[in-house]
Image (tube, rainbow, N blue to C red; front, side):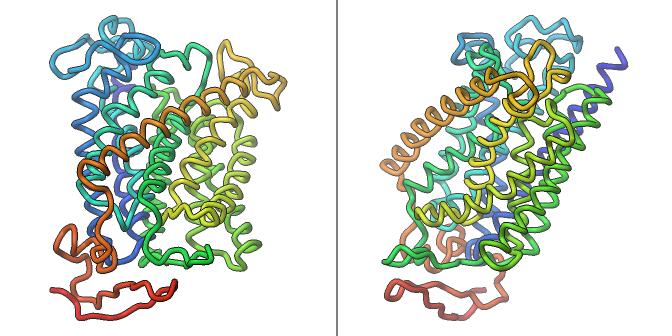
Length: 446
């Protein structure tokens, strides 16, 4: 076998495993940023969502996304593991159902696994945004819809040779395809669910509902940061030493600068270097650099990261002011900075890393690429928002969406799962009282 195919395949599979490991990072961040009485529920959602993603993407999603078809969706290879296109691992052999993946010569199953872990990542983004008040099985149903239909159809537009790809839209590793899709789906879920009990007072002011374990949140951030070195460089789907080296550095640089600027912005606007803002700042930088990581210089990645760190803090505060209750800041990190990162391709990209493409606005390429990027942002945003809204409303009508007031007050761990993450500790429940919060201790449930 060709040594290059072997090296490329190992690279793709190892980076895919790193992206798979990001599920642990999301589980830790979301659990740490929420209250202890909901820890089992959040861990369980993040655990099972990859299983749901695997099933949905295998049965339908992969074919819709990469199968040959129209400019809107794939129509071939929908039952992919049933035998569609089991060609040898050579670059020119894939002339079957998935022509849009012919550009990389790794085996088809390696391509499937790499794309699967990306689909699973989009679903985990939603989990944190709707945490602490959504029914467990309602979330599972939405995750199946997202990974089997919504994510793949948009993916066909961008990565499957669809209409956005034909217009020159670029999203190297998924600022739009993964993070914005997850962010739009999360935002619609928040709007349909409404805020948590006690989050907002009658006068519109917000009450802080601190997470129970920032150490767990920080561990999760480190896991995600590590996973991003699979997420972005792995999207080359080839062991191209020059490209993966540069992408690793642009990815890391953006995260570092975003951490610093988010911390400084937190000091200026809140008065303290809030650790939660620093964690989300790091993630915001990583999200923002995901689309342009292969197309920009290290210096440009520093600027992108620095701006992302400011944006995420402003977004967290802004969403709170309009009563969009996102317990973990997922919309601020993934939606806002997914949009920003996508537009950065049209601003900072350089033609030396984009064959047959013009540079971005800041490097003499004019408005052409930026206009294309903006078109993609608007088209994807409008489509995912509307389709997700319909899906959430249908789920609400058929099986209900929000847990009862009693379950929300006592915690979803007891109401939804019948157990507790911390059975030896005192459980605290939050009760609404005159528009404010009151806490009362009760004996631990064993």
